[in-house]
Length: 492
Image (tube, rainbow, N blue to C red; front, side, top):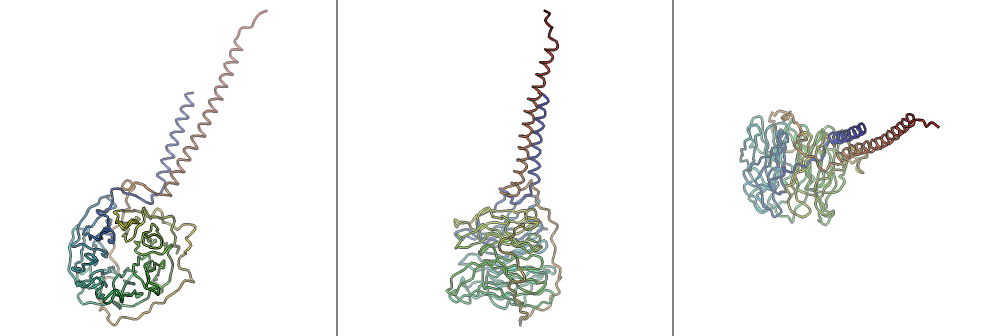
């Protein structure tokens, strides 16, 4: 019996080992750092990354109170710190270059458009904040191309909530530390622009043209394209005029996703349209999201562009959906991705192989401090075998040829460095900093380990019981035979 008990104990140990292996083999996907939440519940915030630090700045709550707070999350050390902007900003824009992060634009509040000319600059090397006053507007867009940071469009300050739109573009040269005071202009004054960069090109797309009052407002389909190598401006067109677009770039593609447009009666319509500009071929094509929505958060991790959350009033308001596009395979897919809760007007950025979705407004109408961290390097290495109903751009997709017509207002050569500044190598956060939570693939592998452990234990138990019974029967036969053999023979 001692041998049987020892064998059973060995099986229990094997079960525990299988459970451990199943747990460790499961790739971490959604990570939920409970201690990592924004300082305040806020939406309409901005996000960017410098080195290993993700920054989330500005925003407002559900009653419109603007915030100055900046939350800094170091995904290597697991540390969170906070700082303050020069002024409160609702809907600011952010960009980063090397060890510098820039926060510009936004508004102090929906009724206060004063003092929008300050740009906050964070230096990650010195861990210091500075600010500079430029001739800038509220609600400006920001992007980086080469070593130039471009601030474009918006609404002129000290005007009404829908005052004259701005076409001014301010340029900061990171290498020379100089601000360009001679203005170049967009082809169309507008606000609510989305901006991104592909190679040597900075693109400013869509937005609204309010002129003087909302009564005569219209949406724009214009894309202004600045080539840093030539200093010239060109123009392109979106397939639909719209605002509320989410944009990111992957490889040589710029993806302008979702947003809202208006129908013939002036009613707002959310769209699932994705306009894709290929910088290599100089062509536009169209794809579609899994559902129409605006106010999403977008970022890129490796070769994967990710669009999370968003708003669609016909689908109940804020959404939980996450769409992803793999530039390597050319497929759009969802792969079971979902935010931890539905929300819109959130912000997103990436650090290494991790995608971060922060803040936003939930279905209750209240702002939330939620921070979702997604391990894209573990989950989105390759697309799902069964892509979503909406494939990537195919040869039959609509193609729009870029209209190459230099602006009458060209920018003189600035002799910038064409190669953008690179950030230090990123080390993704180890599992010890971010506990596992809500991970379907991990759960499956954990369940597999558990199933194997239980199965082995049950089978082993049956073997032990059978073996013990057999041993008992054999011993009994042996004892019976021994008694018979050694029993004295009766003599008659």
